[in-house]
Image (cartoon, rainbow, N blue to C red; front, side, top):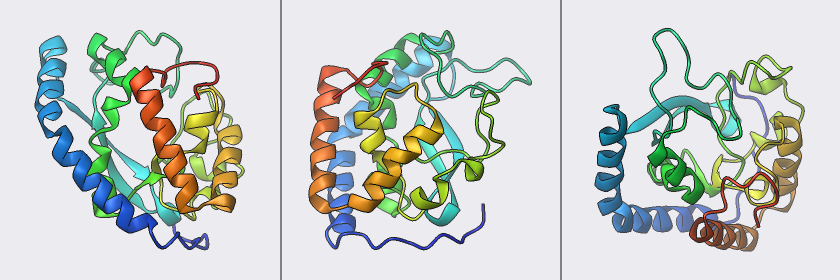
Length: 210
């Protein structure tokens, strides 16, 4: 992706808050990393992490990492050709647990610490999108330019308020609303709602989650 969209100024407390909370999160969750990695390996003898290039602020690419929740693909076949499937058969048993609690997202704390992501913002997406989409790449989806003016986030308005199965175009409307109303207090509210959803295991609900 090439740069171009005009950046939106962040609330003054957003980056310091992100840095401190990510650092605390990494320290507190460090014992879980070993447990989760071992559980993933024991289930299918594969690597613990999934990495992929994702689009960040201004369309800049960065390496996105999360705990792997899907079985390894067959040779020559992509494991991520479809973004969302209900009861996806590719998801492992430990992967289902990680997804409903959002623990698969823990490695993204490293991206927040480095400043590539924020705790709250539009979700980082790959440049190429699923084969079922009418769009060839993420930059063709209406609303992409607006959402790319801010750092991508670990959670966001679309993730908290919208069903997981809605398409990119509708999700981008939530992202645009967040960009217009972005504030430290909105971020704090969305973070608290996200923690509540994690404790309730509601992240994989097909309907309203919060």
